[in-house]
Image 1: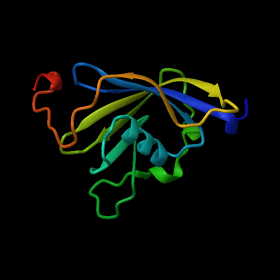
Image 2: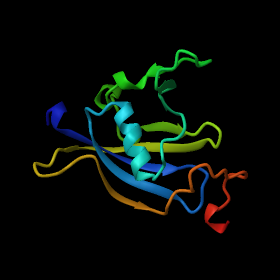
Image 3: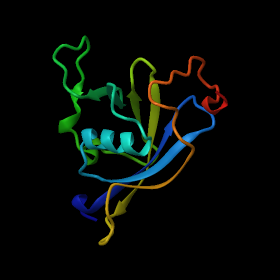
Image 4: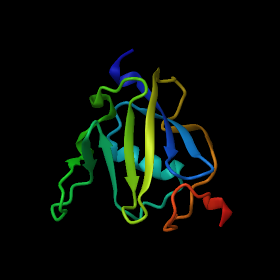
Length: 146
């Protein structure tokens, strides 16, 4: 399978929220982290109002911000296929630094691009995300109970 024909499948879940909120997504391996961010926003029904950051193998990636205290690597220049992922590897994704929504993207497999398929695609999942700007306060508490 050529690198250009690869599709990566991830299981995405939101940490410390019950019931478990998860999605299974398939994205082209040539997607940048910026494009992956947009996919996460869409499938988790976030509104992209806040900052975000990926952490992969101890390195932080995000949108460039010359005024930030801590510089991150530019997510626009990193394609998924360049990360040399192995089955079970995890990418950390934090959305909204105030509410600190922590997501995990677990790499499940590489697939061959379907000839008629349209990507990215969400192929599974359960539960809706908490509303935008809703703060858990005490992690691990079921947000649905409120």
